[in-house]
Image 1 (cartoon, one colour):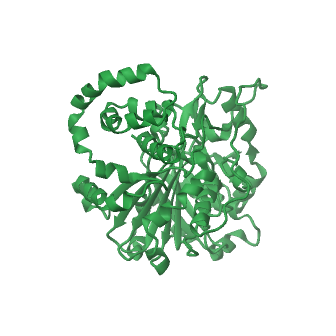
Image 2 (cartoon, rainbow, N blue to C red):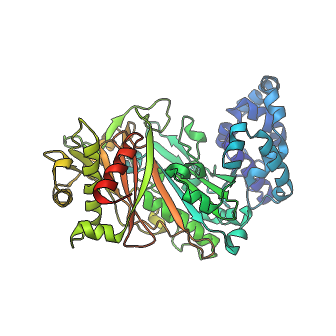
Image 3 (cartoon, rainbow, N blue to C red):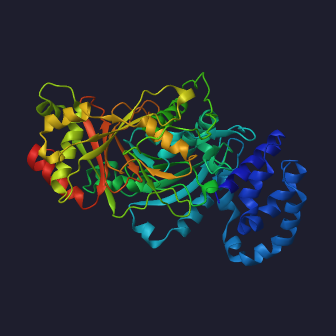
Length: 535
C-alpha cells in the first residue's frame, strides 16, 4: 500500500509542473499489483495521468488488463473499497504542492479515531495517524544507491531511537506542518531514505531511489513526560517508535519511520526507526540532526549527497578462515529480521564518572573496562556457558553529508583461554585491547564472494559490545531546544545479546543499553548492584 502515496504525490507534481517523471514501472508496482488499488485509484487517476503523458512506460497490455479486470476487482474487494474514505486518504499525501490537507485534516482524525481498536484505546499511547513524506523534487529516473558489503551484513538489524523534549513555548509552537515542512528539502539531499529495496538479477539488494517516501506517525500520550520517564518499565520507549521491519514485500517497505508523540503536559517524543542497511548509528544520528538543521533554518549542506555506484562484482579471493564475528542465518519469505529462539528485552544503566574512576584506577580504558564489566557479569549468570568469545564493534570517523550513509563499523573478535568470569576485571579490559582481532576485511570478502545474497547476523552472533560513544546522539535540536533524554537500541539482535555503550549529555558519564534474553536481565541487574553498586 505504500507506493500509492508516491503515485498520487507524483501525479500532483506532474500536473502542477507539467513534468512527465512518473514512470509506468512505479505505477504498475503501486496500483496494478493490488486489485483494491486498481478499483480505488484507477477511475480517479488513470485518465488524467495518460492525458498528462505522465506514464510513458505504460503499454497497451496494461491498459487492456485494467479495462478487463477493473470491474471484477471492484466486486471482489467492494466492501474494502467502500470502507476507504477519500477524505481519509488524500490528506496523508503530504507534499509542498498539496494545499488542501489542512481543510480535510479533521475528517482524517475522525476516521482514524473510529478505526482504533479497544486495546489501543486502553493504551497510554493512542490516536495514531499515518502519512508519507516524499522529497520536494523528483529525484529522477533509474537512480540507484548500491549497498556496500557492510551494509548487507547489517541488513537484518534496525536502530530505534526516541528523543524526549520537555514542554516549552518552542515545542508548543511546533505544529505537525512545521515538523514535516523541513523534510522536503531534507529528503532532496538524502533521497535514498525515501527509496525502496530492490534486487539485481544476480540477487544482490540495492536501493532504488524512487521517491516512495518515509512514513510519519502522529500519536498522543495520556501521561506527562515526567510520569513517563519516572515509570519503572524500562522498555517503555518501544511505544514511542515504530517497530517496523523490511519485508516480506520489500518494494513496499519504507526504510525510515518517524513518530511524533505529544504528552499530556505538552512535551514531545520523536521516535526514529532506521534500517541499518542504510548506515550505522553515526549515519542515523547525523541524518536526523540534519533534519533538525533544516527545521532551525540553517543553511543546507554545500556538498550534496553522493550516491554509491560501486560495481559489486564477485572477485576471486584467497581462501580464508571464516570470520567468527558474523553468522550466516536463514530467514523466511524475505522478512529481514532474525527469528530469535528466545524473547529478547532491553535495559539501560547509567554509569557515572565516579563509578568509572573507581574501576579504572587512573587508566583510560573506558569502553574496554565497561565491556569487561558486563562480560564478566554475564559469564557469572549463565550456567554452563563460559563466554570465551565476544565481538567488538567500533564506529569509525564520520564524514559530512557526501558520505553520510555508510556502515563504517570496524568489526573484531576477542577470544579468551578461559571464562571471562575467571579473569580479573582490569586484566580482562587489557586483554580486549591486546587480543582484539580485526575481521573487517574477511567479513566483507565473505559477503562479496556470495554476491551479497546470503543473510548474516552481526549483533548477537556472539556476545557483542558496541562502542557508540563517538556518535552525536544529542545533536538534534528543535529551534535551539535539546532533548532531555535519548533512548537508543538495536532490534534484530541474536540470542547471544549485545551491549551498547552510549554517550550521555555529561560527557564523562555513559549509558549502557543491554539487549539480552529476557530472563537474563533481572540476574544481571542483581549482580551489577551487589558487586559494583550499579543499579
